[in-house]
Picture 1 (cartoon, rainbow, N blue to C red):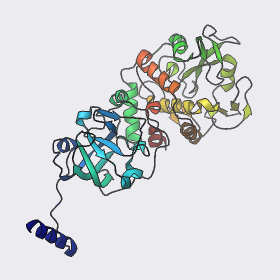
Picture 2 (picture 1 turned 120 degrees about the vertical axis):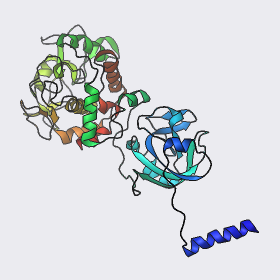
Picture 3 (picture 1 turned 90 degrees about the vertical axis):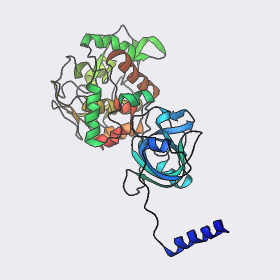
Picture 4 (picture 1 turned 180 degrees about the vertical axis):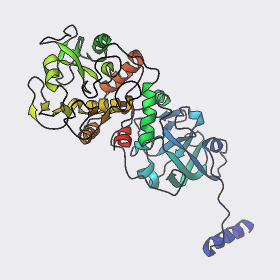
Length: 381
């Protein structure tokens, strides 16, 4: 009879609104991991990935909306330091990672039962989930591009994870400017023969705007040769070909001499007349529209340059603006068009492989917007 009486008393308290005990203090992830008692608790941590097995967490390429992993640091990659959180049906639209990949790195406060999930320290049957530590909010916006980060790149970007806006831009500038190797302009020739090798013909490079395959040996300045195209024009900031922006592989690509000259120092935008010899490209008096397959690539190169070069290394502070016809000022546009291209043409396997090759073999820095496409919206709008 005592348990039954207890139930009646609990029900009476609920019905008549008697005061409830004060809520317990919010736990850290480490505290939650060590408190797998089956009790209800509130935990705050950073969303770091999607658990799919006891010792497996996906940092990209999310497969579902039913689980997420929390950690006390946004850069955590060890599953032993993560709490696996069940995402039940009522929360999946707002907190599922397949639907909302941009949640990675954000702080989450969740209330639920501290009990094993995937045979791992976990929290199940959530009764409240909210971003940050304040009142509950539902993130209705989803990423327009899928993050491509891995545990390795999460380590590289550790000081940037969880930041946004100008703070994120500043952190990425420091990261991409640290521990790098600068190439000579002559050294760019040999590097491009590797970074832009035609996957179908190892004797050739793939030309950037035209998409044509051409012999690696035909590099030079004559008609029929390919040369070093600066996607961010040298004249937009007058940085020349000295070691720095003028030799940065993240925006240098092989292109036919004639096509390179036609592009000149034009900004980027939609429209114009078809470019002879480069199918799918268009140009007018102040802008160039590349073929669809590389539009996103162009945008991410320019976003990289605007983050990497901020005027503190003897070169101009490069910025992306929303105009064309920038001439010799250290700006390149058109921002709104570039954002649209970035969203429509997300990073593909070739772009990711090139980014990794530049990092591992040549400059030892990365283009953040290939690894984290969602950061474009945070920094550039």
